Image (cartoon, rainbow, N blue to C red; front, side, top):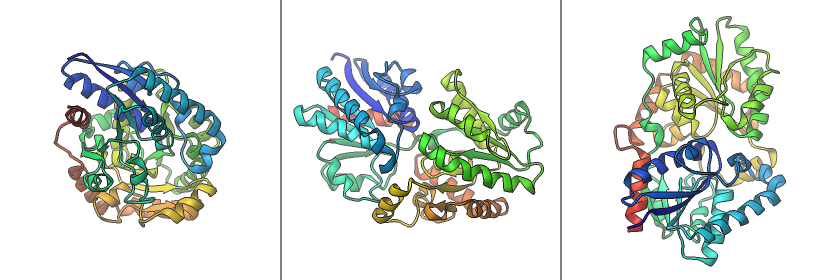
Length: 389
């Protein structure tokens, strides 16, 4: 059997992390070896991918945010689909970023029988349940991060495997590592140490940043020993630096630019655990915080147009993944029209004194998502290979 030919694409840092682990798993599990083509970030490139263009071009979210870039994205979709068709791979693997990746898969399916795999099931359990039926027209196989997702996909005729969530396999930094981190960055006397996570996309940082900065300034005014640390995604590190320069209090920014990707990830992992609490945008970062055992306030707002449309399509009362997986509502959320300085401050004030229930929900979440099991990248690779056979 010759080398497996895989076209793989991701459009944002979380997808790059999934893609890097999946590629490592395929290199380990594919009996005849594997060759890659596609689009990805530093972690996928570290596994041997030569990205066809910079992944940051695709890092957009929300209906209003996509519209100004529509023509450029449409060109990229067309040229990427043509590259897949020209390559004729054994499998096309698209990772999250549905506005881009599913459109590529649709064009590929229109003129070929190339097998398509999508990594990360759409959150049809939270909003727009009709997406699964639409996705089934261009996707053969779904790799799911959550154990309750396969029935939604299988009901529409797609193969679906729960492969575990990578956050559940991240080892929590030891007390010694946390102490060393605090000492290294002159944070030993921080009380509390607040982890600040304003997002990994340019649009959300621009929206969240001013409110985060003002709220943190107000909290710090009555806490002389409060300090903050902000691990920035490489693709938005420069924007983050400009943003925090306007804040009334300045966090330590962990800037990964120019660093080895593995070293930057390791530093981020320790920062997550070393913090006492976090103020974070909604999304998968909640699971990274759960892995670290760091309680959070989840805060988010869309562009006004995206908010108006999405609010009419939501079918759940919570956007927190921890609340969903643990079937609870202990993670406080300040979202949409409620997202303002006063509400963020109030939620953080409560978190400073009441967080034990949230820690328990985090531990349950990690157990449900596969803590102690096989690496999700390997599980995903095995699922891809088994279905191919």
